[in-house]
Image 1 (cartoon, rainbow, N blue to C red):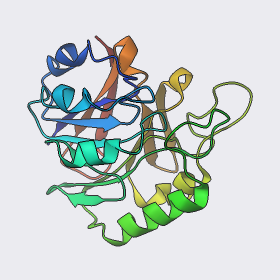
Image 2 (spheres, rainbow, N blue to C red; image 1 turned 90 degrees about the vertical axis):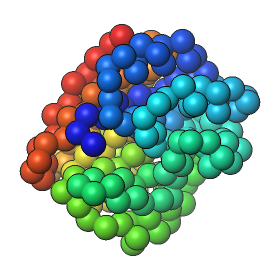
Image 3 (spheres, rainbow, N blue to C red; image 1 turned 90 degrees about the horizontal axis):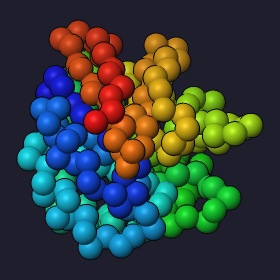
Length: 213
């Protein structure tokens, strides 16, 4: 896979899916908040419209039963999992660290740490090593207002990856690089925002395009 579409924060608004797919990706990453506190009933129908390999984690606004929905769909649920795809390895963690809003899929940083430790232990390092998460790393695309709200655990584990695909903070759409690790928040897909990830032949040869359809 060389060209991957990254979307997140759909919040139950699926009208742009076909427009995203017109970008002709070879695969799709979904970084959570597929629904807006549920329901999960429509998710399988939406995911079935994606005709290329799709890998997803839930977001904090997704009910926990979305894990079962993802497991029984054609989409690969990456929460707590690691998968080697030749020149790419993907590790996933969904949900978010605690928010002031008591959303359905929140975890303590210790719980996030446990999920990541388990997945990283099974990880086979490859040319491109990608973390697909909903919450951003602490102090990285994580400032909706005056303070940083990202996950300390994700920040600690960043060094294991070349690219971190996150979401959660709608206002923090962008790309950063921290200690050689690229971090991208594609912006909310409900507003037509996405990113195309272009993976080259060599390690860390990853180009990121922020797009709006």
